[in-house]
Length: 90
Length: 108
Image 1 (cartoon, chains in turn cyan, green):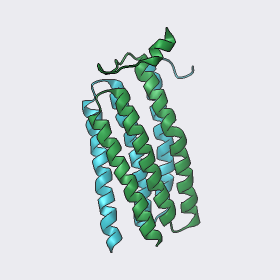
Image 2 (tube, chains in turn purple, orange; image 1 turned 135 degrees about the vertical axis):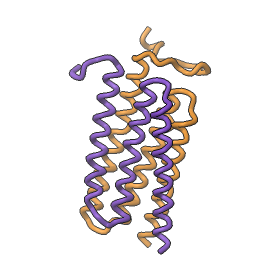
Image 3 (tube, chains in turn purple, red; image 1 turned 120 degrees about the horizontal axis):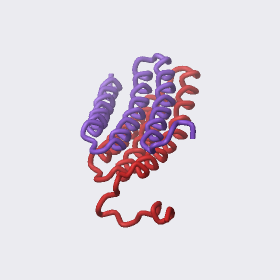
Image 4 (cartoon, chains in turn cyan, brown; image 1 turned 180 degrees about the horizontal axis):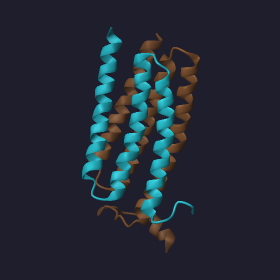
């Protein structure tokens, strides 16, 4: 199957993206740099779940993708509010 | 036919993801990094989800992919905007070769 080779290449590419995000989270000079890395890592993992759902033919990975997108958004908003130095209710 | 089109769209998406993450590594400043990586990674993940819509086997998978694409398109720029604002207010300096700081001009 040709498509299996393509899917392996896609997984290797997305793993490279995850490694680069983790590198930025590790060496980021300030706390907002690390938060940018966490945000981008969350979006990349959504694409990962979509690829897994096509490759295995199971639908429930897309539920994982939707939940991951929303939780990553909420986590990034909470971290941004914390960086700004405010409470969560203003 | 569906498989060929889907694989083409997904390869464009993975390429954009890689370009965005290289921008996340190579850019000199947090604002440049946010600019490069957020836009490229949002487009790349949307292309991957579009390919998932094209290649999906059932109708429910198509609608779930569309819903996830809508969430990504709405939430990723909002998170990036909020993050840039939080970084500026927490006192992160701009790059030394930046030429304009219109947020500070508006504040004064």
